[in-house]
Every structure is written in C-alpha cells, then in structure tokens.
Length: 162
Image 1 (spheres, helix red, strand yellow):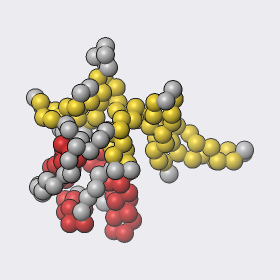
Image 2 (image 1 turned 180 degrees about the horizontal axis):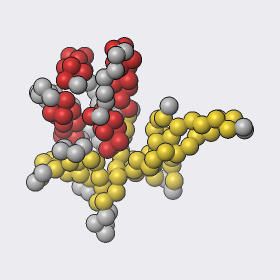
Image 3 (image 1 turned 90 degrees about the vertical axis):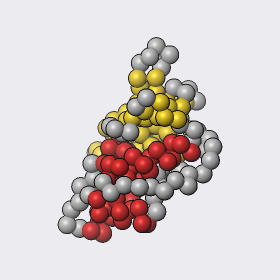
Image 4 (image 1 turned 30 degrees about the horizontal axis):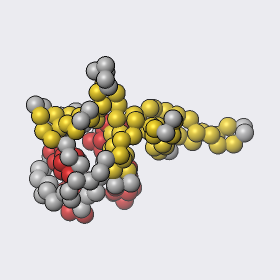
C-alpha cells in the first residue's frame, strides 16, 4: 500500500509517494516516487461550477478546472496558469516553471489532499474490477487524496463512465 508523505526541507514542503516495506528491523518507509514541491494557495472564491460531461476525461477535467479557477488559475493558450504554476487539462499534468525555464513537478495542497500529476493519473487510469464496493472505496480514496471534493451524483456519474 502506498501513500503520499510530506517532508519539510529548509522550510519548504515536498511530496513523495512512499510504501511500507518489512525489514528484519521492522517496517520502514521506502520512497517510490518524488511528486514535487508542495504549494499552498489561498481560495479566492468558492466553486459553484456545474460539472458537465459524460466521458470520464471530461468530467475529471471540469472538476479539476473548477477547483483551479477557485484558486485563481486563468486560461491562456492551451493551459491554465497561476504565476509560475501551470496545468495542462489534456494530459493532466501540473508543473512549475523555474527561473531558468525548467519544468518541475508541482503539488497543490488542496482540501486536505494533494493535487498533482500522480493523483490525477491515478484517477484517470482507474479500472473497474468485479468488486463494486472495493472499487467505490478505492476511487473515493483517490479523489480525497487528490483534494477534489466530489458530490455523490458526480461520483456515480464518473464511476458509470468507466
């Protein structure tokens, strides 16, 4: 089982995907993947956007964009931007441009979750199994980990679109 862990280094927070592994000395955390620097943003306005769509990609795009709009992101060209952060709704990537124009993975601390490329890919790549109850729990957990509030109706609509 893996989960997201935050580490504070020089007063900056960074997110890592970690898993628990058993060793002779007891359980230990093993870092599986670096997810990016964590950015905390202030909510500018509550999102009251009605989420439309019938396909899972459209539903997730609209849900994420509603959250990003409430944080002050604005559409430019083919992406959504706020200062040095950008979100590409086509491939669900969230990045930060550095002063030297390098692209780095970014994580938004959002609704007690962590919105990043990894958590979004986990949702978009979710596959149904034969166990409906386990699927519902896993998918709901994925939305919570991404910090995406989702209504019951939209959750059901998303699950049915899989």
